[in-house]
Image 1: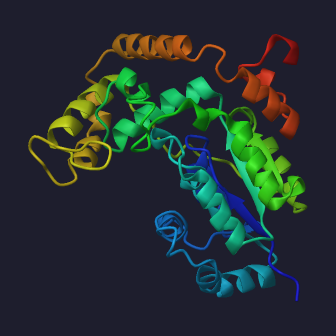
Image 2: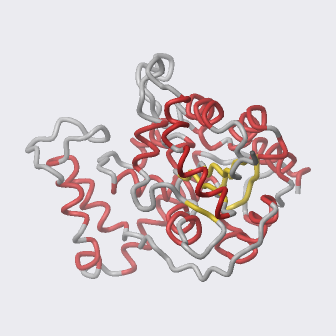
Image 3: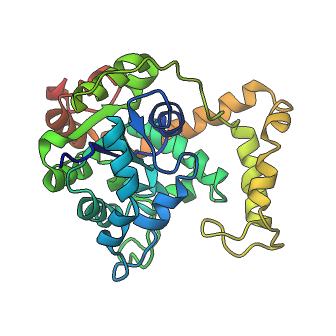
Length: 315
């Protein structure tokens, strides 16, 4: 019996994953089917969180048997999409190879979609997300590699942003012809062309999809306040040891981002953003050029069109 066509979308973070998940992969009239809709945490619970000796790919595959059969009967591509599949940036993506192996064990027939974003932009965007998630460190503190020779716990690492390594690893697992790379910048410039390229690689018809922005960027001024709230009240994995632990403090204060952000002048936000961008540019000047050259060769993407670092001879 013919199997359902399967697509695994692993992120990266901050590459329009929410828009793709909510407006493309879960659209009832589109060519894709998503097993959990808005409740994508189920994928993390099943593929990311289990301890290595407790993961059972056969049991998980059985849990999706009905979904795969329904997808096959309806002619839809079964999509398993979660940006956590690529690892977590603040912890250096330490578990991304393990997650890749689990996905391969469970869905060996799958195609894989990996969406990249220019590294400096991605680091800044993910730092803001780190604060939204509950972190309290300054940008310098977030990027610092404390006791780099010890590595007792996962931490930020620029290796996470050397995209060619994970892309090549997925090619090794699933085969080069079934691993597809696109960029966030392509989506921003022309989402229709982005979707068309994806669908062409899967040999399916491309739907019409008018994407609506799903996540509103928080002002940097508000994030400075959020950091203070996280340090004092938040007690989670990104900010431990709260002075005054308060349940869901990060989330509750975050709901005020709209009205509070309007208090601050735009000039202050621009100054903060420029300062952060300057710091990141100085710290990672040329860091990702060789990796991007390799990625460009592996994917055929013209990364120089989107501002990615490249060696002089790779342009």
